[in-house]
Image (tube, rainbow, N blue to C red; front, top):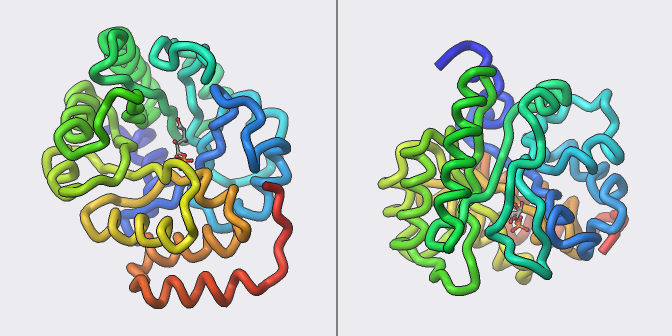
Length: 266
Ligand code: R5P
């Protein structure tokens, strides 16, 4: 791995702990102005000090994030479909040239293993890895799960392993029973998505269980920015991910922080 690739990866995965808290705010690329992200800039600003990385699209990055920020960017470069259409029919939406111009730390795309379009999305991943290797840019493969797919260790293990085999530098997937098998069978680091909004304590447990079973962190969106207390949530998730904060203490931390005043955009 060359210096540029290692340097970018070290901006995403903190070298001190080998872990990462990625703040995912890319949902508008297929969901439009989803709850909590109607005005992305306002949602993102108070959370940035507690995120290691911001995952978002080119449009929101340019329009809503101050270029003077030092937050490393993982840019979503797949899209072209909406919640009203066939999500698996995504294509690559950003050239490597533009990603480099935007000074990203990494790029991300979804793969749809098991869908009728799996070949197209997997070859798009392979092509992005080729370009990433050429320019020293790590690629995050997002294992998207269609409605018909089970979110179990067998399916997620298959999707993560294929992503790694095709050269993804790290993989985002969902937490599931027997998650340690997914991690063990995937030769590159794994982060988990948060998924749909659930009660805060459940989302903290999800984060705790994921890192306890081998994830190197989270790429979490709705369970942070749709929380009644987004800052309290990301700060507590951060302690779990980087400092292995035990669950009981995490609940107490969230309760204490959630009594502090913060602006909610949900
Ligand atoms: C979904 O396709 C997006 O890539 C999100 O970034 C990802 O699902 C993580 O966000 P959440 O924690 O809201 O699931």
